Image (tube, rainbow, N blue to C red; front, side, top):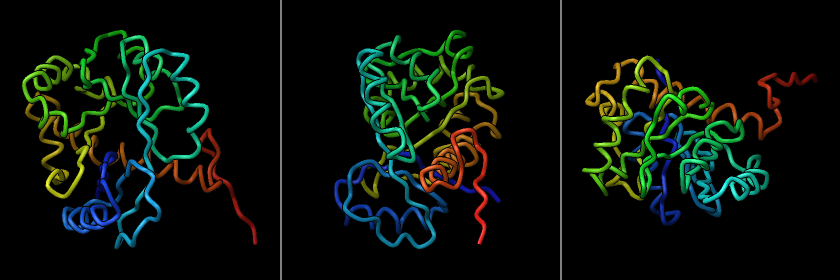
Length: 219
């Protein structure tokens, strides 16, 4: 059974988050990553709630400075690059979990990206709702690099409230309609995002080191 995860929620308040968690649970999500400094994490009823930060940088030095400050304070670290140079640096950096290349000025994927990418490319549905024309054009031209897993891809909702949420199947269908294989599309909302938040959560708790080695506790 798949564990579905949405790596980008942007609630404006604790009350909004509580409402989103109720809907997310009904939709079948196992884990969600929430952006923003919320005072407490509410009772999630079976959903793993982790913290996300989305960095925005216009030069590589600025990116590296931000990463050194926040990497081990958040379970999910994502980057919205201001240009291609920053995007390439973020994709290569093992401190970055996802890179949102579908931004205000979409950065195209090509063979250079496929060669260096360690981080996953994140495709937020919210961007399609805001700019459907340019977003669809970017996805259709980029989809060939997602096929057969040539570049790892995560699909998130980017939701700000309950109305912005979609089921895992609806998120995955964004890739399917662009010609990405169904299995790759399903992994983009399940295995990959769930693994990202889960492994980083264990590292922050000191149960796994940065190489993936488990800490064995003895009584």
